[in-house]
Length: 151
Length: 78
Image 1 (cartoon, chains in turn red, blue):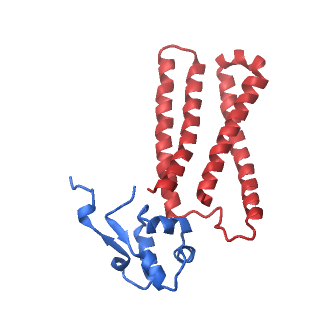
Image 2 (tube, chains in turn brown, purple):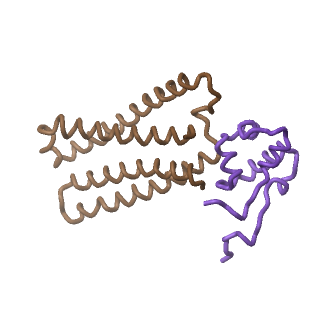
Image 3 (tube, chains in turn cyan, orange):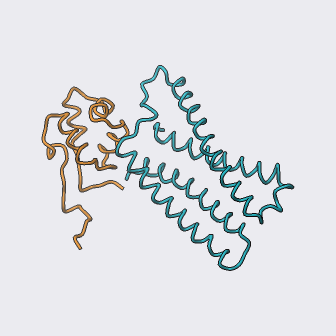
């Protein structure tokens, strides 16, 4: 597995773990407290902001740890720089991000359906978050595909 | 997803340049070894700039490294 694919797989796994962990924390650990609050817009505002901050911070820390692990593990091997990206990496990133943005945009449009039908606002947030998560995961899946199959 | 209409002779040129490795070529042109491997196997068509850099490493012209076969090109002019 090349270093680029390792990075993408690591990102893929950490996204699932952080999202899963945060959902578990909010709905399982604090489930009794928070379940009636899903109807409250403030709950979803805090939920999204907390999740975004957690994602950013956790990813920074985990990627630093990943870089240290790779450096220590391959100190005697001649492996390529973890931070180096070339034109092909940028193209793969742009292409997979574009596809994932389509999913996110589609999710946003779908999230308007329950709102327009007069359902509770939490359906909208759940739809947006679900599609946001799927788009993030699919971005990594496409990157892995493009790295293996070519552009 | 290989691009059959664009072929290259990088493997041959590397061989005649003292069995230059993909990693050495990658370092010379400023890309990763995986990108060189993808170009060699036809999975990726490099930018014009990178193509010129590759040809300058081997001291040959661009058309001596890359060849274009229009009969295999699926592009149709609208």
